[in-house]
Length: 415
Image 1 (cartoon, rainbow, N blue to C red):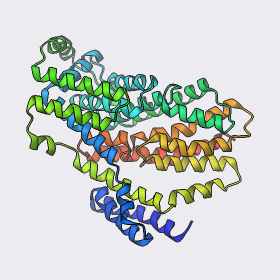
Image 2 (cartoon, helix red, strand yellow; image 1 turned 60 degrees about the horizontal axis):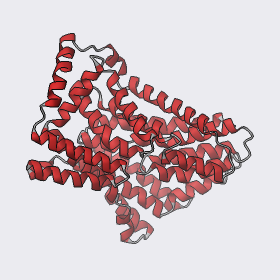
Image 3 (cartoon, helix red, strand yellow; image 1 turned 60 degrees about the vertical axis):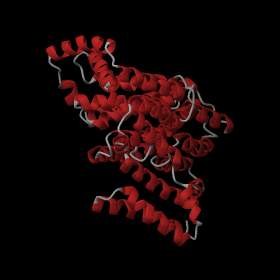
Image 4 (cartoon, rainbow, N blue to C red; image 1 turned 45 degrees about the vertical axis):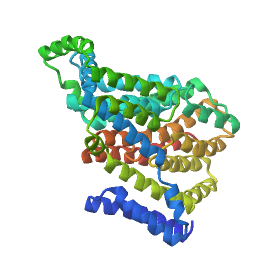
């Protein structure tokens, strides 16, 4: 690694330090840092703007635009009432309901982000109504996407399977799926109890309140106003577009503007309610990560790791690199495509297909589980729904830092 690479990494640490020290939006610090690194490295100015995450910004703003209109119509409250009624006074079931729903959508082939843009807003609306810690609701729901995302029918898993075949590694699909299922379910359970699950199990809704909710929900469903019917049509249209692989952000804006025209919402309020602070934070940090890629920092780290002679060190090193990248890279498919080929190469002489499948499941899970990062799509959607809630941001950051530090070490278990 060169002096420039080391300086770029030190500057990244400084960005986080200043943000935490002064309580400044991380993106606001990262944007001028990107400019500074550009000047030091002599990179053309357009390279800084090339890293701006246009699709991610449109996704977050579009989903929140549509969902805010759905909430204003009163339909979101009715959806939450129905979900709460189905739990029959057992609020601890609610995170697992959205987790299972997300897993099923992904298991059928939808990319996890396509499922999460549908389930996360509902999950966090439930959390708000039922006084459930947002980090608990968000992470458990996201883990459902991780479970389904590594099913044999999902693009995430297909990347791993294709790379294993290309590298001459025998991967057992069933064992791979069961291993990642066990890992992701374990993380969901850990998050559940780490963020208040025990209190949620102990909590009981009064019998009278449960009965009233159960009785009220069916009548609410039959008594929708025309605004709520319009919101329902827009929501169904959005879900249909997303599940048929259309761009999430463009789909959300398209359905949102139709709904906006129909219900004549206050234009100034609609704009003001969008999560601008979240957009600035994610955009700024991704612009800086883009500069790290431009000056060759990530490539240099990867080459250094691949030069190691001990294959277990190569695996753990690449898994660490992939996990770090997954904190900031919007597409887990991209990170899997970069890391899994190196991991399969290190497993080329592994005589046990079972051990190779377990190792690949571990490496893949280490990457996709970081979807809950506040700088990733999953965590970004959670924070956008909460308008950048500082407590939830810290919860998600602590969770993903812990996973990033300790999960890749398990690669040493496979020799």
